[in-house]
Length: 142
Image 1: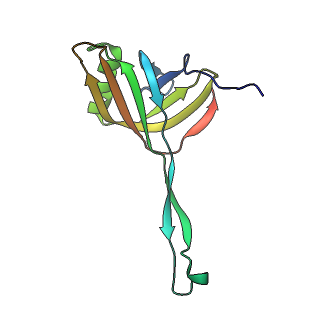
Image 2 (image 1 turned 90 degrees about the horizontal axis):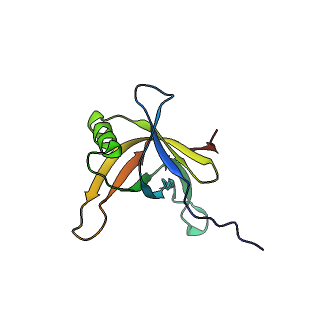
């Protein structure tokens, strides 16, 4: 069987404008994307008569997780300015991760971290951390 594995080249990350739902800002020079990893709370409902002394569990709420986006950091460039303004505004905005086969992952998010790095002998890079603040919608880019 032939593999269907692929590389990430050709993907993109965009954030929806707070002032216009039809305007998306594409983060520049993205080098790595770690989409949110959902998790489900596990609630212990064991009681005095649980069958055969086994604990019993039910599913709780879903946490959409966090996403991490690594970029080549260009201080003062559009992406740097955009992230600073978004974080300062304290707004929840839609983020859209598009893979190279046009599959999209869209979710409301807010900035939880922006960590630039400036090594003396390597490329300057930054990591954007965002909290997915609701459900992740999977679709196809138009």
